[in-house]
Amino acid sequence: MADGTWTDKWHASPYFSTMRCAVALHQHGGSAHRATMARAVDWILAGQHPDGSFGRWGGTPEETAYAVQTLLRTSSPGAAREEAAARRGVAHLLDHLSDTGHRELWIGKELYVPVHMVRGAVIGALALAASRG
Image 1: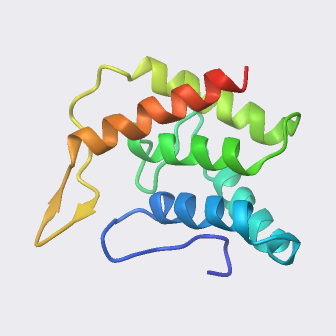
Image 2: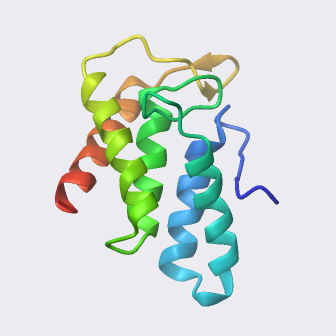
């Protein structure tokens, strides 16, 4: 989309699809997609909440994990804005690591939460952040 996001019919929030598409473009799209990547990163950065979280209707650990992964997987080491936002997102994830009441964002015949997938996204974002220092 023009704002830098991607959507799909299986997730109510654009953070999941944006992560998947942005990471794929970063890894395989080459320089032709640099402007598209910049729009995605700018959209993510603009969407960070004061508490460090990210989310379409208020911050959630799941959406925060997708935003952190997007920022860390698509930015170069030393990218100050991206790293600062990712650090704030990581702090939020750590503060909410034990949360179990996740917002239902996945779409089947009704909204639901694949708890293990959400937990995996959070742990993956934290592991990625730890590997980057």
